[in-house]
Image 1 (tube, one colour):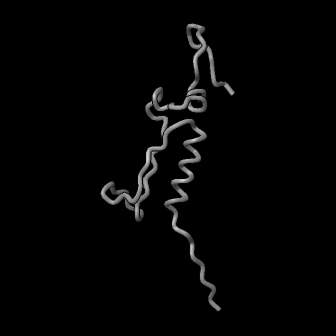
Image 2 (tube, one colour):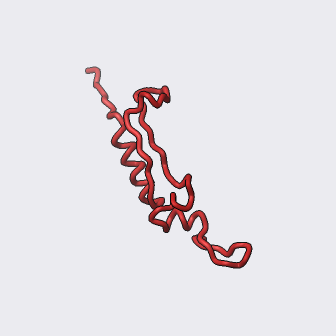
Length: 84
């Protein structure tokens, strides 16, 4: 899975994949290792009108699960009406 590799000095180090997948706090090593999720009421991206926002941190699998929960929580249900 290439979670570790030798660097230019032949020292074994964690790869970016290793940090994202095996660290409890990858954002401590990689400042951009997080998901910023924001929900707006319409198509316009205006910070003054955010309905919900969350910085999702942690190992990559946790980030993916939490981001999916954020999307589910902020997705409006679809209504269908039969025309009978």
